[in-house]
Image (cartoon, rainbow, N blue to C red; front, side):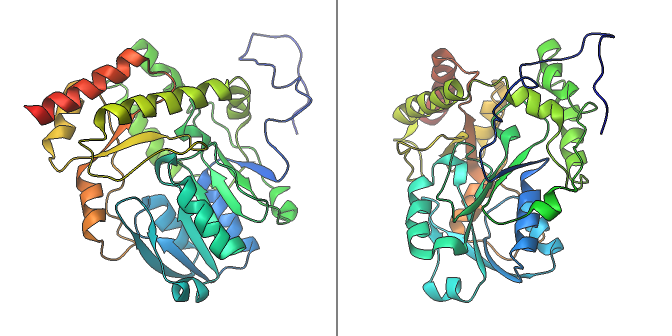
Length: 329
């Protein structure tokens, strides 16, 4: 461990070092990536057979394949509800559930009541979601806040032997991505962002970097929560009549994005032309088997509209106007 240093040149600082209470709660373990939480759970729970969603990101598919365990896939319906049978769940050791876009809280609560501690919840798209102590779950701060690494595992299982030996990740060489778009356009920074994303694939399991912990120590979590909920509500009010998805936001949900499905690929192009950048959720993974009609529609046509805490009411109105004008014209 490095000894404390005094003086010298000024560095980035926050009140993190002087906090007496961690931003992480009891049973929360900070890691450098959310997928590493799943790796740890597979190991500490001695999982050899898992039931997992077909519709999920490539990194989760790869994590499961690399674990060299048996994987059974299930599909989802139009409101992101898993299409499961009791026999499917009974024949597996663990059931991995996605909290899709942060609006699947009610679905997950119903499944937890039915299947209990067999469930692992992937809250990568739902940072604020918490569950009862017997439910293992993990989230991804970098999908909600301006940080370059981070995953938080919540479990009551004893992982101290593994966790105590983990080193801290180092993010100094990645952190410039957080500020580059302030000095140039988002489009100009995109290649650097892709390189950063690709480099994450090679990271080994480590603790969250100290830089990320410092930045998270400055976040106004309640402000971000309320802003995201407000932006989602406003967007849903304007766009729900056009949306092919059956979605809603309950009281406890804090969405990552607004999932908007409209079966016309040109909408994505129109959004990008207006500097509204949307991700793809998710390209077909070469680790999984065949998809269903709704999953193909989501992969090809889903527009995940931004609702983050940096957007104003005027921003949301502008995004909605682009979508509505495209559809009506």
